[in-house]
Amino acid sequence: MIDDSIRVLAGDCTVITDGPDREEFRGRVTTVVKPDNTVLVHDVDGYQPVAWLTRADSVSSSGNGDFSLVAKKDGRTLRVAAHDQDGFVQYQASRAGSPVGECPDCGGSLVCTTGDVSCVDCSNRYSLPTDATVREERCSCGLPRMRVERGLAFDVCIDRACESLDDAVREAFDREWRCPNCGGDLRILRRGGLIAGCENYPECDTGFVIPDGVVDGECGCGLPTFETASGRRCLDATCARLVEPTAPPDP
Image (cartoon, rainbow, N blue to C red):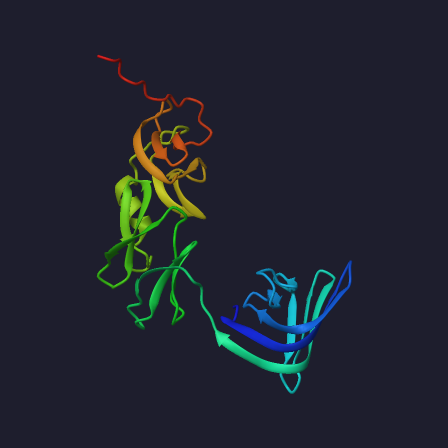
């Protein structure tokens, strides 16, 4: 588990990068070490660091007296050695995102980032489906609700342990469709992702990933069609029998 803290080292330093090309710098710089071991060395000019190493395999540092740091990745080494130390500190850090409410456990701010909602003050984090929209409406547990399209538009709590999206989709569509290969019922199952899989598995291994969208009709193959962000499609993504609806004639 990545330690959620940022190390900051500042002072008059020599900075050396070793790899295919060797470079050496000297100046009063600030070095930032992020939780994923990304190292950024900044001076006063512009926004781009004078030296950096992205997601280093290892980072070792020492703050006893004059500080030093060594980061290594794929044959490259970044060294920072202080001649005059201004500071060597460690700060707690979190993801930064759009505020979406208050954490019901600790009262901290909940923020929405790509893929999840997390609290800036505690370890609470809730993974989101890729197409989820976090809503202002609150669940009875105090967390925000989200809207997700899986055949219908479902509004559920962002905490899957509180309200299960799988259960909501299962209640709406379990056994609603027939397997095109053996005629068995398609069950709503969790197998890596949410799928409509044949009840006769393993004799019949037919299964279809339920797309992000809402059911809007029936394909020529008998399976449902979905209106998605990228257009209309059959539940079977490989189906060649999808017929787009014909617009009514002008009166």
